[in-house]
Length: 120
Image 1 (cartoon, rainbow, N blue to C red):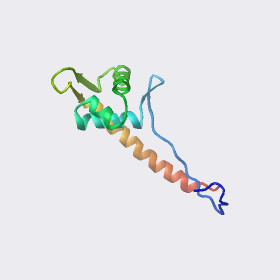
Image 2: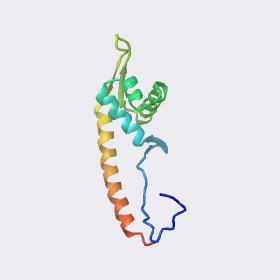
Image 3: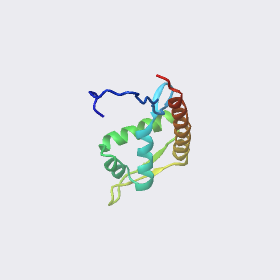
Image 4: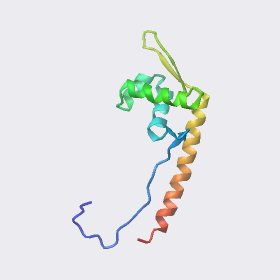
């Protein structure tokens, strides 16, 4: 939409994202959940990073940070092999994914309700 155009009645909405924090540090958000889902479907951190157009190093750092913050591994990395190793998403990670999706769904309902109430 062109900002030069005069809008007779603008349509305002409320927007936001869900982030999970642990010990006041960013633990997980949309990107890290997407990374976990790619790891689960591809079985490889390298392939998951590539699918997200993310460096392997950044993907590894994200997983390492979540593993350390939670105290329970979300992803177990196994090195080696002709394919370069594997990555396994744990049951705990699946619980984090499910919890995040549930929170995100509830948040989307909240955002829609609040957007409908706007009278600006």
